[in-house]
Length: 193
Ligand code: GDP
Image (spheres, rainbow, N blue to C red):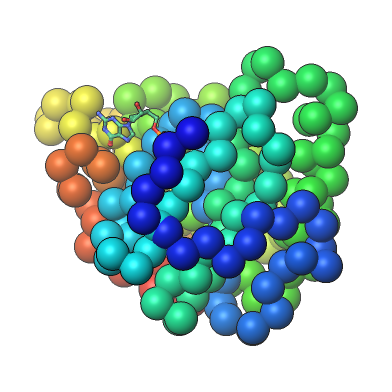
């Protein structure tokens, strides 16, 4: 487990535990190991914020983070981890369904994909699943530092096509390694709010 600086409000399993302060909320989703914690940590550089990533095998929770008393970021447990049992997968599904279908303060979702690869079938499924709740989505194509500059536009285009991205949704190229795309990511998130 990685422990960084953080202001975790609560790790919630059930709906009764969700914070009730009415702040606009952004959920962050992505397959396990895609770079979601690195993305969040790059965005939240202030010392009063800390972030702990939950790794496979740990209890699956929705982690609610207070961001400057202005927003809530909700770290959704990663999907696509092969070693998860059937019952754990089912519990994850129920937790997602409850959260996404009931959370009134949820403004949109940031979904992280790896810019090096075509989105997996699980990524495509997740995108479609989120769209069925009518949520605006920002796609963060991370690990940009691993792809040469001239190849990046083609990868971005292929990601858009594979996800069959809604024209209203945006995609941002990002790297936690170099900080590339940090400002654009914030802009896209603020647009959701
Ligand atoms: P999570 O499981 O989605 O939270 O993924 P992590 O943020 O823990 O990252 C998984 C692995 O990818 C770690 O080894 C990170 O150092 C690496 N990683 C994450 N973001 C980047 C990036 O932008 N560039 C590079 N080169 N590696 C990254």
